[in-house]
Length: 171
Image 1 (cartoon, rainbow, N blue to C red):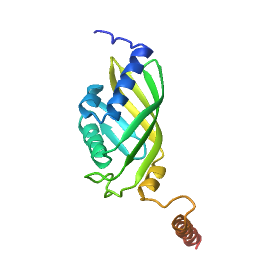
Image 2: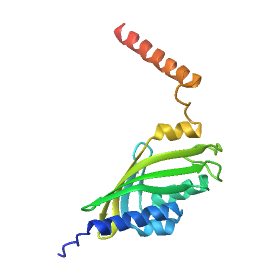
Image 3: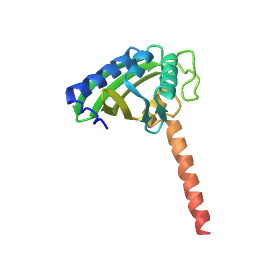
Image 4: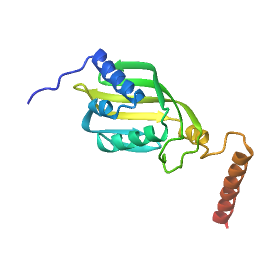
């Protein structure tokens, strides 16, 4: 049985950089070329994906929903079979499709996130992506802004519900 070749950190970094540059170009075909078929990823708190199927679908929808989507790598570090990438993305939700069930709001998103990729034999096997989903939801208008009257009312209603539930459990 052949032993898989060990990638060097520079090879791992080149795959990660190439993949994220393809994301920035909104080039689904090039993006999927970096994935091992069946590779998995999770944007924690948002969605679980598998390459190429649901990855292509989800990112294709993202690019249609945010036609001016812009993506840049802020930092990239590779060691062993792992690449850590801190990134920044912007875009206006004014495209031709819904995103995560929401109709286009016309709002602009400006977020920073972090992905940890596992790369073996020149292909992405796994991606664990992290971003502040609540911040994105606020920017899209799905959650009220921090400190706003709407947020205070929402928190007040939640605290009232919690207080009532606590009293009912004691009774």
